[in-house]
Structure formats: structure tokens, C-alpha cells
Image 1 (cartoon, helix red, strand yellow):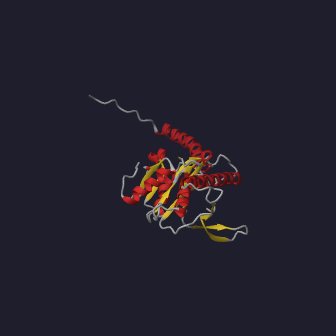
Image 2 (cartoon, rainbow, N blue to C red; image 1 turned 90 degrees about the vertical axis):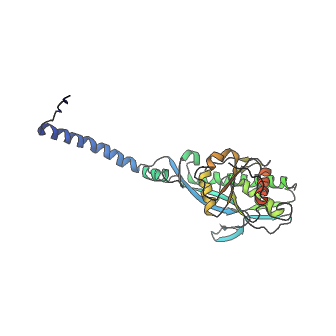
Image 3 (cartoon, rainbow, N blue to C red; image 1 turned 90 degrees about the horizontal axis):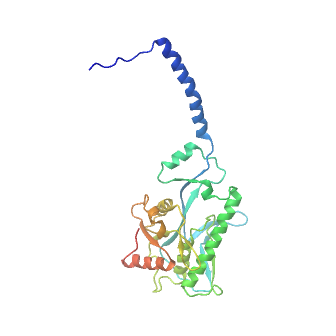
Length: 280
């Protein structure tokens, strides 16, 4: 079958069409160029620092001078020498008001060690000062709940035992579980003369209430990266966040899901003794 011959426009007609297409393309390209540099309502997140609740951190005093202090200072109860680590893990986020552009967001979106999150989810308060105040209030509440949960587990009275917690610039509520474990390890260990950690480097995340219930926090894939970078081999997380925990889990990091402080302690015992350990 013979094909239908194509129609070729004369050069005189193609030239104006090409010029018209070029003229139409210029505004479109200009629009993309402008959009690439327009600030977007997204916050960029990446793995943050860790703080060992059994160790010390650098903080600034009222005059701005840095000093090293213990994360946990306990009075009113005997303290024991500990081994291993119980790490609070954090996420670093761009501050409110930073001009994150389309290019910034795209670069973070394709990077498995970063995340792009709506700013309103990270900072309900758009003002940087107010946002910082909120995260510090959340940390204070988390510390109080962790102390109550730990002392309740140990059957100790908060009227007799005082716990001071220093975490420097770390804010938010997600360190509660690890703070409670740190308090218990410093006072009682595993209850048999040993450590909760068994000498291992353990990290984790999760809110906690005064009754010892562990709550979800978000950002698990970035926190597992932070834990791995700090040398942790075990990561405690809220059971409800197992699915997130399995996203880009670093090699050699064991995920251990829990719902309560008592489950966390039982899971660490199983890890130490080679028993059945919860897993995602």
C-alpha cells in the first residue's frame, strides 16, 4: 500500500512559526526560572546529633561560655557506674523563615538522607523565637514525664529523688523513652548488678507519659541514620512506627519496637541474653 505523502510547508511559512514558538517559550522559561527561586512552604530535614543519656553534653551558661555537664544528675538515690550508651537521637531542620527554593526542595527530595516536610507540620509557630520556645516547652514536659515514669517503675518517690536533665539545645518531646531508660540504668541498672545496655551502644526515640506509655514521634528514617552514624547497633522505636523504621534502615542496625517502658526494659534484657527480641 502506498503511503500518504507528507505535506512540507514552504520555508516562508516555517520561519514565522519557529519565531512564534520561540517567543511563546520565552515566558514559560522565565516562569520556570522565577519559580525555581521562589521560597516554598517546606522545611528540609536531615539526621541530627545524638546525646548519650548516660554521658555528658556541652551546654552554654548564662554568659554564653561552654561547659561540659552530665545529662542526668540524680540526688536522693544511690547512683551506679554505667557502661554502654542510651542515645537520644534528633533531626536537624531548617529554621522558620529560611528561603528554601524549588531547587533546594528537589535536591533534598531525591536524597535518601534528607526529607521535605510542610513547614506547618514542623513549626506550627512560624516565628523562629516562638518555635524555639515551643520545642523547649515540649522538652521540659518530656523530661518531667520521663522522670515520673522512671521513678514509678523503680517504686521511688519524686519527693525523695530529684533528677536534673541537661540536653543543651536539643528540644522537642521525642527523647522521653531514652531519658527514662537512662534514669533507670543510673539508679538500678538491670536489677541484677549489670547494665540495661549490656555494654552496647543503643539509641532510640519515642515520647513517654508518666505511666510509661511510648508514643510516636515521626522522622524515623532520619533518626535511624543518625543512630547508625553514632555507632548504635540497636534502635528502640514506637511499635506504631515500624513501617517507617524499615525505610532505608542502615545495615547493622536492629529495630526493636515497643509500646511501654516495661517493654523497652524487657526487650533490652532479651537483647543482652540472646532471647526472643521484638522486631519490625
